[in-house]
Amino acid sequence: MPKTEANKQVVKTKLHRRNKHKNRYNFKKLIELSPELANYVAINKYGVETIDFFSPTAVKILNASLLKFDYGIENWDIPKGYLCPPIPGRADYIHYAADLLGSDDNKHIPTGKKIKCLDIGIGANCIYPIIGVAEYDWNFVGAEIDDRASKAAKNIVNANPLLKGKIAVRTQVEPEAIFDGIINEGEKFDLTVSNPPFHSSAEEAANANLRKIKNLKGKQETKGLNSFGGKNNELWCKGGELRFIRNMVKQSKNYADQVLWFTTLVSKQGNLKNIYLELKKADALEVKTIAMGQGNKASRIIAWTFLNPNRRKQWVRERE
Image (tube, rainbow, N blue to C red):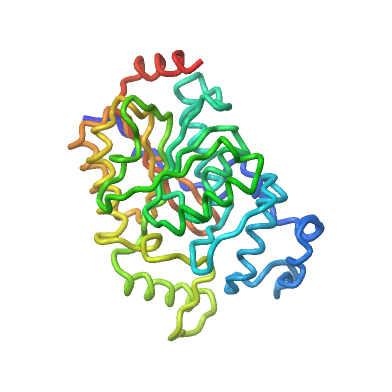
């Protein structure tokens, strides 16, 4: 039986205490660094400066501005149609992951190049590694199945001195493999992160987008507009989020001694029960559920390890 914290979930309506995006965006300073952003900033009906989050161009320019202002990334771009993720939520994942690693070292948050992380599905945007490098100086390997996304991520790394030598992108050639072909023999990772495809089909993804627009705009839409973009393999896969994570859990057992903590984002709370069952079948020794919240939206990170506390403390000592 794995030790779990599934019943200790507390939905956090605020971002992590170390998250640079806890407060409203400082558009004045963002525009000073990225003047083109001024074309997309307006005052909403509440008298607050914002952008049109239904505009893919506005969202992309805002992301580039935030990455420049908060993380020192001067050159960031993604191909048209690829996922342009909301940065505050991605930053929260990295900060909670840092706390997780610190839990094995008297809550000391580890920093520096000795920390090695694996991002399953780095995407064209390279967001998780960017934040992990900028905030904690960690090293990353990013796995990616899409050749164009891999190339875009590599371009971001090569265009920013801060990232060079800190992020490596590896191509996954087997569609059903998650760790095979990516983790080399004898290679060790302190952490894996993942933001799995959410939906189980293209139709489901499209319908969800229409519902989102209706909820936000208050009217029925027949044509979707995904301002955050996303290609098929970024938005959906056969069996959706649950199948992807169950496969990840099954395959993680083969790397039990090479990874300190496996983690994944879980968007659908209804999937938790089956994920816990899969973790039990895989003989995970400890499972943690880390609740996250941003406004009215709640999600969580599931973390698991096959190493007992003594072995994890030994891992930390050997890392130093």
